[in-house]
Image (cartoon, rainbow, N blue to C red; front, side, top):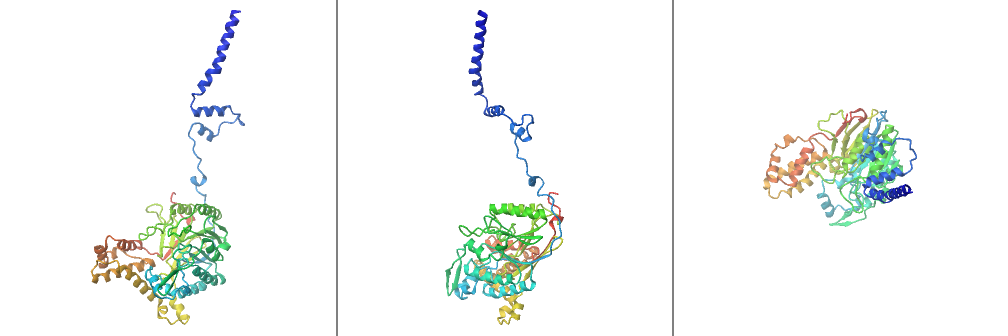
Length: 498
């Protein structure tokens, strides 16, 4: 009896330990172990299967996200297919101004004399001469890369769209995008007498409506958060017309590619890459840091991200404007990169209205290579053929060059306040000569120019100054030719990592 009593007492002590001691121990176990213990009590649907690699890493605290295909191998091998030969004309920064917005009086003179040398007075005739060359060449498409209007005036947009319609009606597709001078521009104006008066600009919605027949209405696809769109020109060539502007709620000079547009771009590029289609992107702002003169507000704010996206899908070339200078540059992914290694090219078109008034001709060859050549609008030949009697039109190249130098020289004179009068002329002439060649894309020999008397005067009297930095930047930026390019098929080039 005593033994039974002792056995019962022992069982009671053991039961008390289970009830009171174990919960106390569990309460002092680290949280991570508590969660694991809870997971172990849950029923498993695959008890017989070993834990997956991800589950094992999670349990040991070393979970890593599995890299995607693009992070490890890229988008795959490109498709090398024969292309349809395609001919294009591309122009930028037309800055169209309707004659109905001015009487060419004092206010107009103040406008043009403070500009960068644009020949706005003869823009109607310049456009007609350009139009005649486009109609004669009859390219597969005409592309205009932004800043269609002078300063976003609605009247200018409406009239310019009608001029584009004549080209479209001749069977030449026209594709446009906005620039920073086109939408919600606060200084849209008209110029009569000695007064400048504000006039109506356009919204993004109005821009798309006005230019609906010049790309938007036939778009294969449109970006969700910008005025960007994709056009299928033929079976092997697509145009990606990119809206790089920042115009809402206010107009800004700088540019960017919005997040939704970036995602849309990758979808388009991925589709084209898989089918061996050449995508030609066109934007207003620059993709690369091209200029020592204009180091801000010209390049796309997120240009590195955009460029990496293009290069992931072996995009051959990007066309832009905005700088008003003629520029050709291949992106070098590493120092000393050879011509047999891929990098995207960028071609910046000189403003059509800034002397020498150039545009580009582009040929997409059947082997996937691309040829580019800049041409000057031949206003004089057009003027003679159309019975014009104005000597400035009949000798337009000489007039435009002299006009540009006069405008810039007068502006530079005002900055040379502390320079002896007899030396101002030499310094101003030196600056304007460099300026003219820089915007035309004419090669400049820096080593030769820096030894000239005029440059020495700039060093002596104006270093350091904003004007001197601009002068030196123009000389350094234009040491090679920028009026032509031969771009190989990127599919046939080595990739930088290879």
